[in-house]
Amino acid sequence: MIRAIAIFSMAGVAAAQTGAPAFEVASVKRFTPQATPGVRAIARRDPPPIELQISGTRVSTSGNLMRLVGAAYGLEPFQVSQSKEWTDNWTTTEVYEINARAPGDAMPTPAQVRQMMQTLLAERFQLKISHRNEAMAVYNLTIAAGGTKIMPTVFTDSPPHSRDRGSAGLHIRIRCLNFSMADLVEMVRREFDRPLLDKTGLTGGFDFSLDYTAHPPGMTADVAAALAAGDTEPELSILTALREQLGLKVVAARQPSEVLVIDHAERPSAN
Figure 1 (cartoon, rainbow, N blue to C red):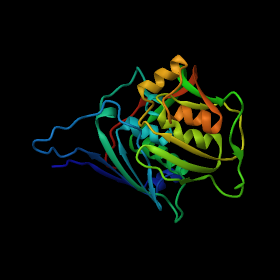
Figure 2: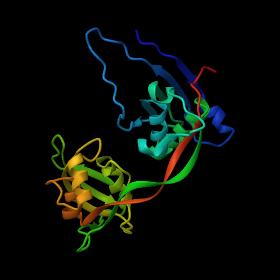
Figure 3: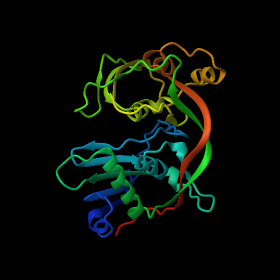
């Protein structure tokens, strides 16, 4: 039997007193999957980042607290940690389902949803966080020798958008229009096992096509090893595609990066 603790909140009422963006109404349920006889569950030690599903004004997601925090702040799992002074296993072992409704009639943007999630976590989980900088292995996106192969956008009056051009399975064929370098990084960053940082210095929007073989949830060992050794990467890897199709190069580096630290949190409880 599935056990769940349901907590409902008129979050917008409390948040209105502070001016913080908040969901109009939200429910939080602790989820325990039902065991199926004869089926052995396999727990992943490092599950992939979770997604915030937006449908109209409704928002849903699920995950443990560490993953929920990462989603709310737009961070990868390795950019969220617990402080040495406060650690608790439930933050990684207990899964919570969140279903909420944003205020108003318009569909909220992902950035607005993340702000509402931050408010929800602070109010319902009593989340307290801090930030610190530490040296971290990263990949820098730079301009390759010979210069870029991307053109300034002709769709300056349109928001960034992409069109599928016959993708099949892990083989991605996509056309990107009015994409900034930040948009490009956001699109491909999960192909890498470290943060991907824009160091191109390029501004504005660009139109380009990208054809590569995806390797989720992160860069495969052979590609990472090839990059570290300076060897030629496997055909159609994201590294090859960025360099040969866009004139951009990925370089391994170490630099100070911001890490979000959970200083305190509590299991959500009914009001």
